[in-house]
Amino acid sequence: MSDQPNEPHQTHNINPPALQTFIKQILIANNTPPPHAEIISKCLLSADLRGVDTHGSNRIPSYIERIRQKALDPTATPTIQQITPAAAQVDAHNGFGFVAAHEGMKLAISMAQTFGIGMVSVKHSNHFGMSAWLVQQALDADMMSLVFTNSSPALPVWGGREKLMGVSPIACGAPAGQGRPFILDMAPSVAARGKVYKALRRGERIPTDWALDKDGARTDDPAEALGGVMLPMGGPKGSALAVMMDVFSGVLSGSAFAGHVTNPYDPSRPADVGHFLVAIKPDLFMTIEEFKGRMDYLYRRVVESERMDGVDRIYFPGEIEMITEEKRLAEGIPFTTAEIESLNREADLVKVERLKVSTLE
Ligand SMILES: NC(=O)c1ccc[n+]([C@@H]2O[C@H](COP(=O)([O-])OP(=O)(O)OC[C@H]3O[C@@H](n4cnc5c(N)ncnc54)[C@H](O)[C@@H]3O)[C@@H](O)[C@H]2O)c1
Image (cartoon, rainbow, N blue to C red):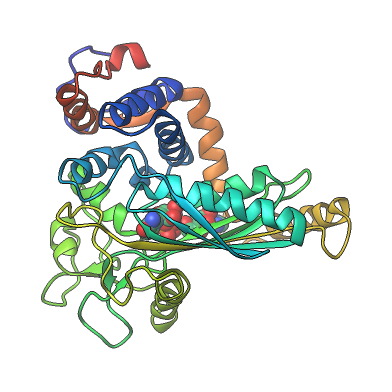
């Protein structure tokens, strides 16, 4: 592989630990406290590893621009207010969403360990990337979880034509024994808007059922799609799920809602995102062994179910991403030359050593 890549869309496999160190250094050089930079870089790397390229390290330039424009405070430390023994609120104070949500899930898990359930509302936060890393945080503690967030307007409500609701992901999970854990993490749109940004970055077209342009016509052009609206999945049901994310994350927390969250790519003002996090102890009604045995049985029933013609394999929710993670841990994470250059521009600005393609493969 060349040291001087010049094809913008050529991909190069990047070594995961080296990438995390690089991202951490950029964050620290932009006034992020090292323990926070550790959490953020780990979450971004987790998205890169799981194949959720739309919500991984490629987001760094947009986050750093928010720091530069003082729309996000990288030094903010979240504070906690315990409301009841099983309910607490985290105020992110306009710091990184990753840090406040990580603190929130830690707290939800600790309440669930004592009371069976822990519920945390996070206010005045920012984009936290891929929701699945929070589900994984709960799984690492053998907990079930619900992970909701709201986000900036991208989707019309059913029957509407203006961007109003966010493409706000709904995520949840449950641990298993021998089989794969359950990790559902999905945007209520046909596709996450991050997939449109990724296509724009990579010079690709998008499927015509993802979005409408500003005139309400179907489009395969990512730039036109970003000027228009994302389409909800399942018609009114996807639109209703987006409203649900706003109720639980925005209305309940005291953060922005009803179309007032700022886009993560708009560095002009704080985003004021809200999150809703619940951890649930799975062995409330039976032993943990019995619960996990039942999850394993469910996994087998799902993946061994009779297949439709043309289907080679049935996957459990989250399984495709877990398989991608195993592959990328072994082979590295593919980034295009243009994406590496964009990260390196941030490195240059703060005098962090550039990602050298040849040394990272
Ligand atoms: N923080 C934010 O504001 C924000 C906003 C939008 C999206 N996101 C993130 O974007 C990511 C992508 O969202 P998406 O809706 O495009 O995801 P997706 O459509 O790729 O996957 C959605 C879910 O379906 C499952 N799945 C997909 N294909 C499957 C198959 N063939 N068999 C079985 N299960 C399958 C996946 O495991 C996943 O749980 C998510 O990680 C989400 O958290 C974040």
